[in-house]
Length: 262
Length: 225
Ligand SMILES: Nc1ncnc2c1ncn2[C@@H]1O[C@H](COP(=O)(O)OP(=O)(O)OP(=O)(O)O)[C@@H](O)[C@H]1O
Ligand SMILES: [Mg+2]
Image 1: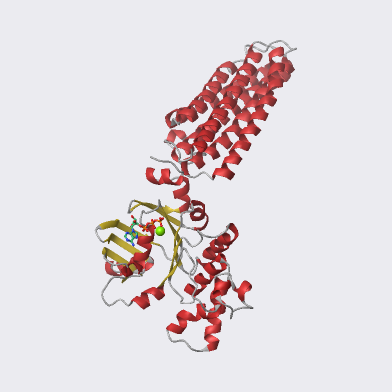
Image 2: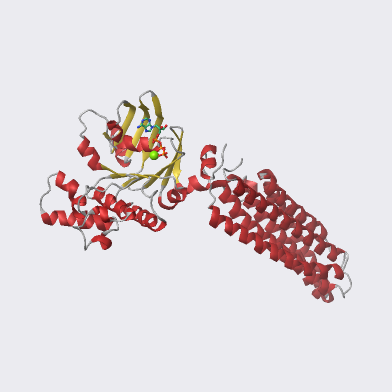
């Protein structure tokens, strides 16, 4: 293998690479020189105090920040070697590859079926059988199929909060993304719905790269493989989740996970 | 370093004090067991056996406290290591208490018979074991891993004395079979003391884990582990 091939292979082996990323909302800088590798087909949790930049970094991965006026980014973000911010990168393609689930579930005001079929139809898929297949598979993957299979033509707004969130996960899955970004996906849910979402996340782990932002440390501990701790816009450390919660190497991380102030 | 939740700080402090209290009780039991042996004091041996239930009771109480903390506070990082270490430490302390009881039982067994030489190096071995017990408890309170390492090294001396005592007792028994029943009991006592030293070593190793997050059990302290 040539040195160049090796570099290419390494880049390929990482799902997302952020290199020296700085991010600004107008004059105020929210991210400082962040370099991080997200491992493919694993679950990575982002933790850290409110305002430390977790959501901002997550949204950099699929250029969701661009809708906010006056934002600016420097540094590189590569998704499987593709430079996300390179001119000519198509947003639609990017958002299909990098799906997102938000804290507040946001089903479209249409039927359950149409919610899931939305993305594939947007991309021109009309074949009923193919759409049926995608809807069923996505709902099964997000563990919602049993609960809704007899009412696919009812409005998605009739679902409970936890069901709506799993619907949103299914809608993301219908696009067959490589990466799924989740920003506090279970923070508004009861313990049972939370467990279901966590179980869904873990079942998806071998097929998708998942990055989850959570304020619930136990949730990060329960369902992630890697954990990254952020503080005041900087990445303090990233390691296996077991290491971070048992014996982190940075004092700041230790204080945060054990609820101390330093 | 305080926690955001001051009640949690208090609970951890209480837990530490309870472990120390248990440690103090075990130290005293071990001391009295050895005194009852060297002074052939059956009364003290009986008294010591009677007090063992207090150790068992406190051990259970601390165990429950640890489980409460795990369930209700879900400690992380150093706090997690502290609580899981405390659970193991009290288990080892309780076993040391049992060893003290076993020593006292043998003391009562042999009290009626004439003294078998000056119990060889058993008092010396007991002194080292007690020193190790004190050392591992101090290491626990002060989070002193150097001290914990010293305790681990002391264990080698106890092991060496144990095999020396074993050889000497064997030669007694060979020379004069009348000593067999006494000598075997003394052998047991030496073994109990050796076990006490082993438990102290376990605790010292747990202290290293608690402070550094590094598991050193089953590694060689002299190799710098
Ligand atoms: N739309 C915005 N305009 C200006 N500043 C913003 C905007 N969104 C976020 N910020 C600022 O950027 C910083 C990082 O915010 P971000 O939302 O990424 O934090 P977070 O870690 O996700 O916090 P939380 O846990 O509360 O969701 C904060 O100081 C925040 O005030
Ligand atoms: Mg956020």
